[in-house]
Amino acid sequence: EAQVTQNPRYLITVTGKKLTVTCSQNMNHEYMSWYRQDPGLGLRQIYYSMNVEVTDKGDVPEGYKVSRKEKRNFPLILESPSPNQTSLYFCASSQAPRYEQYFGPGTRLTVT
Amino acid sequence: GEDVEQSLFLSVREGDSSVINCTYTDSSSTYLYWYKQEPGAGLQLLTYIFSNMDMKQDQRLTVLLNKKDKHLSLRIADTQTGDSAIYFCAERSDNAGNMLTFGGGTRLMVKP
Image 1 (cartoon, rainbow over the protein chains, first blue to last red):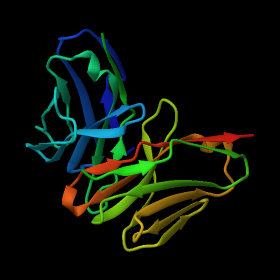
Image 2: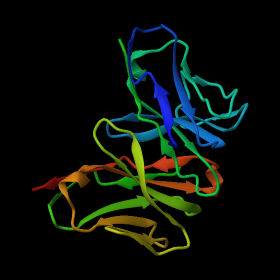
Image 3: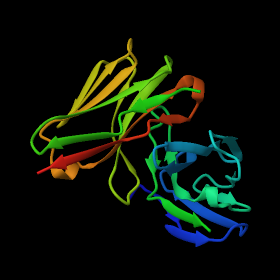
């Protein structure tokens, strides 16, 4: 089954404790993205990757890092989480030419 | 940056038609998308339309695009309670590479 998976689905952590949210897709898509969803703000893109070792900033990259060492995986790293990063995070993958995004199930992160 | 706007809320009765509207500012949009998000779930692609099309119909869904006015709509015929969800429109332009710009989402409530 074609899918995008994320882990963990729920995470509660404390300020400053480094964390990684994993994302994996099995559709051999070149493009992968991370979004955060906040009430009233829709989805905002954090980072995206056009291929292995190629990443670029989205609209709200501050406080996040990503890496793309393999085509299927695109982890999101929060080196020093802060409460304003409490949000619902989605990973997505896509492919030319239509670039419709296939979304993972989401990770709800709470930083206290 | 480019902007995509939607009304926040729509309420309809079961069996009626629903029309969800979206406006965007990017005149170089190539693809426009409609996504559905049910509670606790990720975004599911409903349909898309290429910018050189005026209309696309897929079963109960009809997408209308007025490129001159930069207006996109999604009509759901014979709306059912299972259609209750948040609907997001999104656009992609060649200027933005892989980035999709999402609207803030319209919450559709279907009353029995």
